[in-house]
Image (cartoon, rainbow over all chains, first blue to last red; front, side):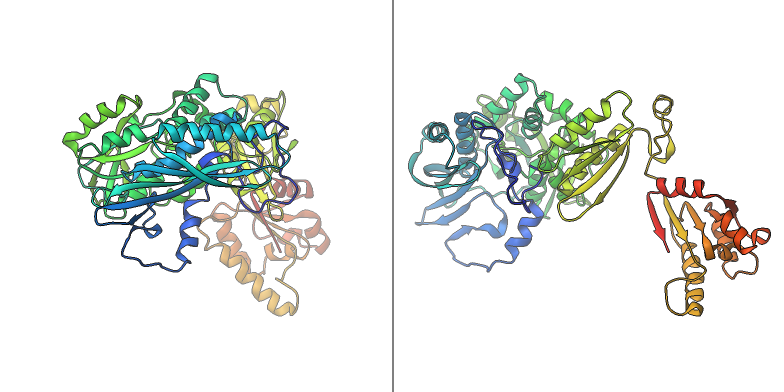
Length: 357
Length: 203
């Protein structure tokens, strides 16, 4: 949905008795509150201080990292959203894959997950059962355990997980520590937001939707395990509803610059055409509004611009790796994520935080 | 022009339906109601990319009225579009200033006459001057010889601003022969110009 606030009372309705996609909230990560708005709100909260909190929300990282012993830290993260697909089993898989991704983006291993559920009182309970089954399937695939949860009634369904992971205190990977010269690998194709928007409008082709769903369902576990298998990785994040360019900008941390290779971006092919037909999300435009003051995308083709802003639900990992190891890591990742590609490189801090080859 | 109510509809549904409405045979444009500014921006990208005229206004909280007109902004409609819809004037024109008195504001007329001189002078300082300045009723006195505003209006005329005085008004005051700057016009032309204006200032 273009709107995520100021919802007038009474307009919220489900499109049909069986439909889990509501007309009130955009599904998936596209429903995230805009990045500019969010950081302004967070600045208003008191600053917490604990020497064992190795990564907190002050650094806009993917998950919190809290040291529990000399050598180990827990990773804690939570994610939930409303459906972006009609099939509840598929939605459950996507929501769980998305929620656990933050642990992998930090270089960790998922230990346990708790279900977070909102569900309409009047809706068929079997739909809820399928959502939870989809989530459980992915928790098993992650090698983790489902340990409980919490559920409430709400106007529309929402589902996600609170996830606990573990990582060595010297082994977790932040997102704002890019090393100059490192290459950037993106493990999943861009365009899932645009394809699902086209699907919502009833004009996406089946192959495009299948590619988007398969990408959203796929765990970032395999790519993360390869990344942490001895490669020299300086930073990593996972691409979310904020879109690729917002994440790249966040990773530069006003310390280095990034040169992106627009021709090497992995994309779902139909998304280019849909972007040129203006089948665009509200979240994508919010991302454009947030980034466009700091990054000039003006000389890129319109569709490329939109793909850089496109909100990704359960997006891929964005990994910065030493240049001499990039091809090797890329080919290892391509085993499970065939679209993975080297999409840019870290450069000395220049006039603009991000430019384009 | 067809109006479509897209209140409560998530992106990209407003864009999809606006495109459908614009594709209907003979459609000269579409008015779209949406409930948030981001949807306005997404409609604007579609209009700009398609070479359509675009304008919008906010009508209370959470209610935006977007107007998309086939044909280029600045009146550069293609031959095909002109043939289809000759009456469809783009609404993306420049600034038009409508001046209905020889003084500015209510209160002291003496102060009001000083203020209107300063008001007109200030337009000569704008980076983007108005498209037209139109003088009605007592405002007609400002374009006739002897008025202190004539030098600034002459300067504006030199910057390409159309200076237009209502003929009926000048006749009424018997000053038609002493028009010092610009041209005489009629109410039909005035209404055409203000209906096409991108923005209108009326004092």
